[in-house]
Length: 88
Image 1 (cartoon, rainbow, N blue to C red):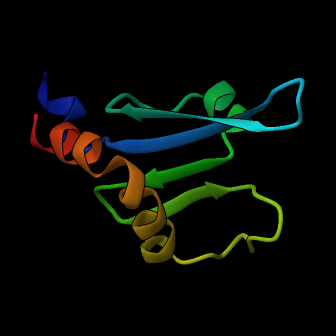
Image 2 (cartoon, one colour):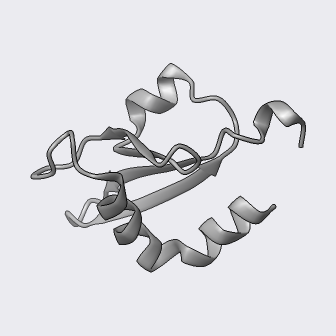
Image 3 (tube, one colour):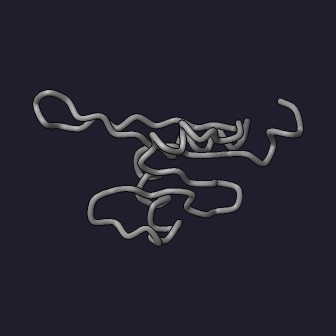
């Protein structure tokens, strides 16, 4: 991938509610620039390079929730995917 994408590494989470009331968690790892539509639709966006929270819109979670706490939570479930994404 070209050099313009080397530092743009985002962990993006969306949630969809199923008819039975349960949630589906959809995770995307992206090296591309974040568009306004993607930012608006996402519930969580983490910048893995600058280690900052771009967006968090979850019930009961403050907007200034620390990056480390969110990253640690998602890393429990997606460590292999995150490691492969950063390495490649």
